[in-house]
Length: 317
Image 1 (cartoon, rainbow, N blue to C red):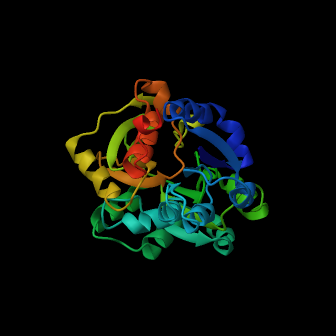
Image 2 (spheres, helix red, strand yellow):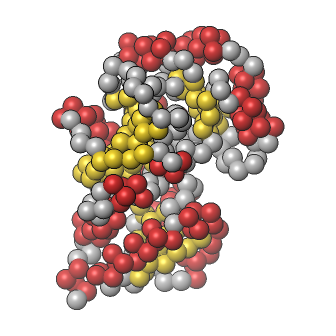
């Protein structure tokens, strides 16, 4: 029996080793891992044997929904993919549960005027446009203290399509306004105050979640780029969550039914943890680098196969 991993062409090229991990871990279940391209998934389902389950490794919620509609278990679910693959929608969905980085969603037509504004005008615009939550005092402090803003595509991934509003206006102009179709999928953009931790480096934290369990946390940092993503050269080290931080993460987990996800937090200058985004299609390279003893792919497969699908190893031996 097969397990399918659905990729787009670019993602397939980048993730050969990741696919190999799935294949290796699936051997003990006597399952094959088959890579299916996103453009062929619907036709392949009609032409091939139905898979036991599908891992969608591309940001296209309609594919998740297609498999669900055909009665095939898919990870993550359509609902997780729909919410978490839109950064503005994620923060709006969770803003009453945990402190989130203040965010507003903009359409393509708003960008030319926005780029012409200076920092004070954009701060004024943001403060009056933003819909405050029960964390309003902390949200106002984040907005008022920001010495820059961040503009990014609503469905970007891996630190791509993310720019400093004040320092990278030319990049915004080139990528989002003059050539909006050049590699940019989403017609919507998210504007946020830049959150700095007050230290000498930019840092954020990725918390890996498998099901309802916190699997690991990794601190990412960079001394010269606010985008501290590992894929952009950021330094990584294993992090230990405090009891308070664990409670914050669990409040996020309670709102979803995750297979596996990466929950990303920024830190304010007074040490508060603010939710920034959730990666539905979370990679694991940086976790294996700084904590190779944590086999998150093995844990994920065990959770899906044994706890969700009741597919036991001993049943196939």
